[in-house]
Length: 345
Length: 261
View 1 (cartoon, rainbow over the protein chains, first blue to last red):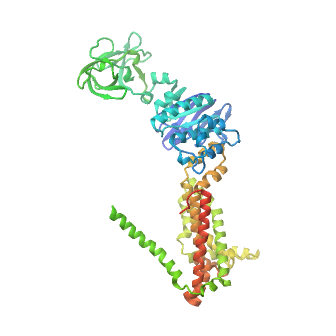
View 2 (cartoon, rainbow over the protein chains, first blue to last red):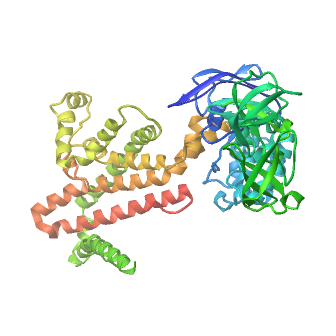
């Protein structure tokens, strides 16, 4: 178990923390935009950067003051850090400080055929495998991965991320995996922590974080979102009504103060588009543009009576897509369970 | 584009010819039967041994003292770093004869250090020690600057990765940083050696005896003209080339790759 207590680190104008975090024998994905402090956090845990305050505990042992080499944390950086003057085998053996049998690590990562190759002859995927194998050969108690797959092409990344999750689950140590790629995050993480401005703003299972983002950053980094300002109205049947221009949308959110302006997040895939539609949470709209997105269309919409432009997804083969040409009037429904109130952070 | 390349080629070619022509001219200047006996004369061999020995010693001392300084300057940010770098560059910009003068004020017979050394039975001038003191002053900046460039080129993340794998700072330096920066260090050693072999101004101020090759060439030149200095010049040229090739081969061995030039 890794525990981070009140960790603070300032670099120029940027401050990481104060932060609390517990990581058990699981894969915790830190998901956040560039500059949110993900790499800084890893570097502080690894000892590459010295913290300004707080504690880092490995079990019950405080490792905050320990030099990098005594922390039992292996770190795989974003860029290639294989030692270029050593072969693959020498890189792996270099990490094997205790001289143990490392054939298992070689086998797990499938690198037996490239052991005698120079590192500059390896492909991106092979380099990643060797980096990870080398990290594991050092018998770490915690594995820190800083976007290790980010430089790979999509098919290689997809294959390696699937393999990697299986391997990491088999190893059974705390793993912190930093990424800005939400697809990787969904695939790798037992839990996902959303990081923004040096702080963790939300943490939970991939599903809970996606379904119920708590902040604007969490909403935007976990998927496409329509972020709209609305005003809390009176109570409805299951929660507050939110007012959007002249529209009154029912939600399942309660506990808010009437009259307060709030940010509302609605995922494009939750929005229903029809040529006809009346009743609760239906509004009038007009198609601005239909954009082909591979497995679906994204439809940009103007909503009558408000200035916000929103995006909805429709499937390629669905009936709703028929005649969705630019300028066509449509009916738009925001199901009440899809309306999430989020904070401004 | 083609004319640009041609212009670059012509200008570069002129400079290359300017480098090579005097050396070739020296070799062909007086290739008669008197050269070989002159080369194997006692004074030439003595001067050659003195120059090669002191140059190797100076380069080694420069490495022992200069490589740690280069590593420190490469890896540490501090307030007075530019001043330290200026001090490192100072011997390079001082005229060698002035370097000799300032060294004499520190190590000469009338100085405190010189007097103390003399009491201990060591002469800091007119001795091999004096030659090495002069050479180290003049050539060590080459080692420091080239080694710093070598260390700068090593990604610090490799060092962090090494330490995160359980290796200490010292182990990381010897097994990762030093081998990867060896190219720069070898280049610095080559420059330093070449400069030490040819060092004249500071050396002659510190030690007229024992004579190094440049001193012997000068003495031969003023007593017998270019004819007398010629064999020594050939020897200096040859020995410099041989030692630089040896250092270069050492660099290839250490790096397992190309020579550092």
